[in-house]
Length: 346
Image 1 (spheres, rainbow, N blue to C red):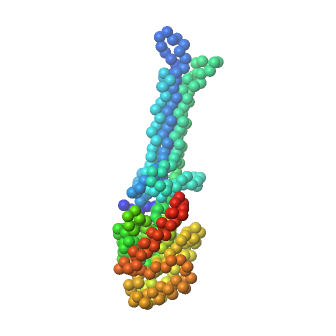
Image 2 (cartoon, rainbow, N blue to C red; image 1 turned 45 degrees about the vertical axis):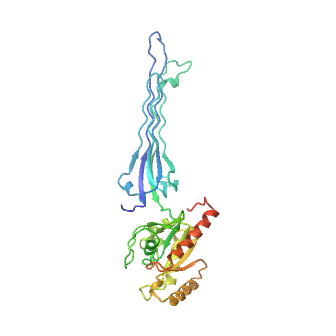
């Protein structure tokens, strides 16, 4: 299925049912009085978050969702049946915004979460409601209120514990393949990853985390260069970022330190909070150099970057160092969850 992370959705709640104009007609009751019932409430429209969906592609096909109207009232003080509420399923991680007012309506972060996006119209009063001591035979009734209409902008931000970032061909897809059952495309040319991939990394019984791989970033991504700018938002909910650096780039003129600084600058330019997230340095492709040379180069890269956080030297292709990296991440996430179990990852 095609990955789509933005969509526009029109919703319309049901109209309220019409109130009834009726008078009681029974034998021996010549002046029975008004007995018109109220109309039913129109159905409201809700969004409901569900697991197992990772795209908004369905909303490119079905853009309009309309709830049913309430039924009209009837005689003998009978109220009309209310219209059933409509529930529209969206992926977990979907944020909802009103297009016309630009109001943020909600953020669907947990499975089963519901959000009312259009209120059903109230049913109209029957003429029995208008009876007074001076108006014993009212002929007024309500026609019912219209249901709310809205145009919604849906934006999907994948929910993951760990986000991978780096230049194209830094080895992000290879790493997620080495640690999880995810099988993103891997090739020897840039931008093989065209949309985010998620993988679950298992570190023992009841110990796992979700890792997200987004398309590679290049300088100017925050302004729209390359592909990564479209997907930087998917890193917003992560707890830690893994910054992958290719220690043996094919281009002899490439400087891993300069490129790493450019990536950090793009994060800060895109979002201030994203630039302050915990970030680890993962220096990849150690298998292309002798051990002593690889370790020396990794220390030099960290020194030139003045990096104070965790540094891991790995080979995604051979798997060397990847399990140690996964265990370190799991320990870090366990400590984060213990310290703030209800922390908002937004």
